[in-house]
Amino acid sequence: MGKQLIYSVYFILPIILLWGAKPTKRGEWNDSFALDQTKVFQGFLTICIMLHHIGQKTCASWLFPKSRIIPGLEFFVPIGYIFVSFFLFFNGYGAYKSYHTKKNYLNGFVKKRVLPVVLSLYSTTVIFFIARLLVGEKMDLPGALLYLSSIKLCNPNTWYVIVLPFFYLAFYFSFRFIKKDGVAVAATTAFVLLYILVGTSIDHNDYLIRGEWWWNCVHMFPIGIIFAKYEDKIIPHLKKYYWVYAIVAVLAVYPLYLYSVYAQDAFSYYGENFFAPDKVMRRRLTLLSQVFVTTDFVFAALLLGMKVKIGNRFLRFMGTITLEFYLIHGLFVELFDHTFDGGVPSPFPIRNVFLYVIAVFALGLPSAILLKKLHQVILGTGKKKAENKLLNKAS
Image (cartoon, rainbow, N blue to C red):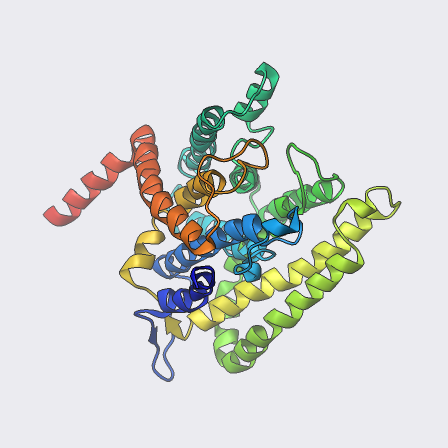
């Protein structure tokens, strides 16, 4: 009975998402692009990403020996990149909208956008490095330096915060030095496409751009920028033909996902094609299938959000710590697995997957809060927010 409890997550998740949700009246629209709405949904997706990482440790098909496989979270194992695609879309969308709505937005851009992400990378890298030492992982000086530099990932979930600063910098330099808006958008898009072309030419390895998850959803960053640029034309069109687009987008998600699975089987990212003369083309054909499903997933979520306003206190709170929870929950995923990142035995293995999920969330949540506080102290942003609140109350 205890092993079956993990299936309750499939009932708990919809309750978490829809608790407090309010459908709009006929002829009215919810702003699914509003910051509070996107943050709420990102808070929900962060929980899904946690389940994705735990699923990879408990029921992924590649686990060996097969006796290690404990069923329950199979649904989440292959779709982490789909969840992250939503974040990347709004990274691009938010940067473009802010550039056009906030005066002198590019002044201090690196400090506001890039530095917090880099800080998140290295603060969690240090935490994971200490954890690796405490669990008994042996490493020489070169190995330690590879970990601390993040050339070899000390925190296995940090690819996102490694690539995102480069995309932000491409955006910054494009819009700082290119006068024409359309050309700046094209330049940023070209940088991301170049990154994808480089990534698809690199075999799986232990260092940077280690595998397909480093690049199979990053196209959503320029798509978010392009959507923001033409939003004033797109949104009225979507409203005019809303039900056509909504029904098609929602119904297409699963067939497009099945096609992406077929493409992976037919073309493959993986080792059996390392020596094939057309291995790069195979990766790009597989990637194309994932471009379709990620784009449609984000599109479907936004369309549904135009008619249903989601939000409750829990998800609003989760939306304030998405980055920190994304980065720190993996520490407990590793500590409660049978090995720490596939290396030395973990000190606290948990075989019951439901208890595994509860333990990761119960410890990941306060850790994310503390991590956010630490980042605010280092960046000096917590004090500024408190001062702004006082000013708002006074006025």
